[in-house]
Length: 608
Image 1: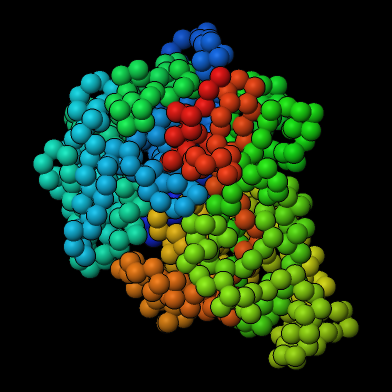
Image 2: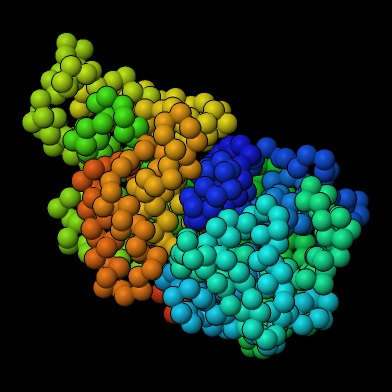
């Protein structure tokens, strides 16, 4: 997600933030990710590696009317273009189904949650344990060699051989086997089958050319640290663009006019070049965007409506507030063992006290729609899974009077200092924390603390450095803490979010590292439903199960969503390029910054 200041984090998607991280025993995905960044982070290069050597010391210019400029994805000199490194530069970043150079088998569409064909033409479950993926026979690598099932098998198995970004899928996969040159069978692990996670893999894992990477492995003597140091300055991919130029000021890719996908899309992408200029900070990026030097902005722009007040051809996907489609729900989590906070009515009262409109207006610049508490986002892709009428009686709104009445009812009496006492326990001070310098989160937690005062609960903000926050989150060393549960658009939503919030199996006790369910919530029935959902395909049954799960969550309140955040901040300037997707334009192209998932299709729609 996006913050005014960023501390180095690992990248990830829904399952990376929950299930995958558990298998990797890595830190949980913080609310900002390198692939989804809107503000300048501290520049880091992996140990033992320097920034990628520049191709030349002079800027290499390209015609403006042939070049699409983007910002907000790269904040410092590129270290490498190596997917294995863990820190690849634009446009090779792992995690958002980025399709410019390396393509995925399918593209995720944020509008409906569907997977659309790319390198894969279709997929089907041939039995309860095997997903068959059929491949596009036209697909070729940029060096002209055919893309085949062997490449798919090789790419998947790199994650089995080495501990890399997609290794954790092997918790759920037993084998990946070629069925001729144009089909593969992904066989699930018999002890840990999970269809949703396997579907995540076919839209998330970028395909690598076996004939190139086998040679790189040999060069590195199959040593992962050595392989990570490979710059991969001229990556061979199946995508429509190849590396053209980079230095510490910008990165440019050039269209491959022999791109195999011309047969799939009916044409080549409109921009001959795509360039990411490396701006020093958000202010510089915003100024360039306003002055027509950037076409697609992926930065947090405060009060974006001011950008078009003077008639500038700048717009967001939605014409009116909240301007951006929601993609995640940053939330606060309660330590379920903390006296006072172990009471569901106290947690509900805190939820009812929060001024969500103020959170949206002050912390999010109005980009968060009115809060409708649920395990699902209020989007076409997710809301269909829950019976909205059934959960409505349990949903809360900002209601200070109602929160006070609830606390009065359970016998929480105010002391002389105005703070309530329940069964001998003073309701505060409780600390609520998130990393220092994440200004939008910091502001939202100040509002939470202010709101709680009005109902006689004392909450104080705590903003440690990110490593401290990460340790507190994982070990349960907190009263209340902020994090994003499974914050990405994927086939596994809303299951992965429910799992991150409520699933207690495999969660270490307080004091030990946990990678989901950080508050240690326990509900055997919730565990049972979460276990069962990945094996269910009937829509009516899924709706019933998610509705029951959401009712449990609304009743027990182990977490409280504070805001809806965009997956990406898709803002466009149509001075040079026109025809970017917009709501109700009939294109079914999502606002995924023209390069992520099905948003990639907009490159074939825009024009001068």
